[in-house]
Length: 156
Image (cartoon, rainbow, N blue to C red; front, side):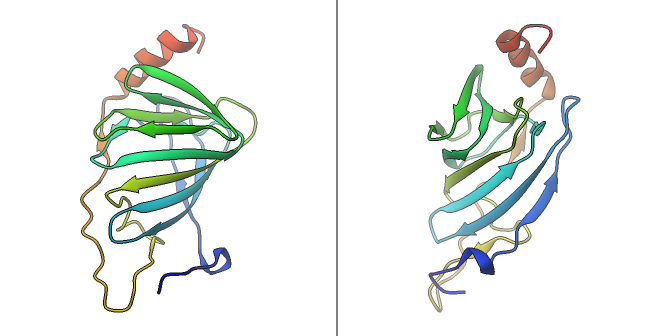
């Protein structure tokens, strides 16, 4: 593919997720290099991911909208212009409780989602694709439900 890619050359994939009694979808564009990966994801209102962890450190930047992200037992309301770091192996998940979508840029090191359909490697000619060292490891949804009750109360 080379080192440069225009957005018009990307094809975003749709992932559907339904967890903890909620639904939602996200549209993603994903790239990776030899040491890190990046994803630009637009999540629809109501999106609610399952709690998970991975060996990759994750840095997030919200470009539009707002979303709650939980890291271990703490909830963070992220709004346009906010950054958030998720340490390696920290349990985390996201929930869009607002009526609009949220777009976030996410960087992962080591590279994450290399094998996901539609992910593009930005590599020089002859450069080998990185080994996918980071994959999602599921965590029981009961943990997330407990943390959300603590954050939002029983009516959550």
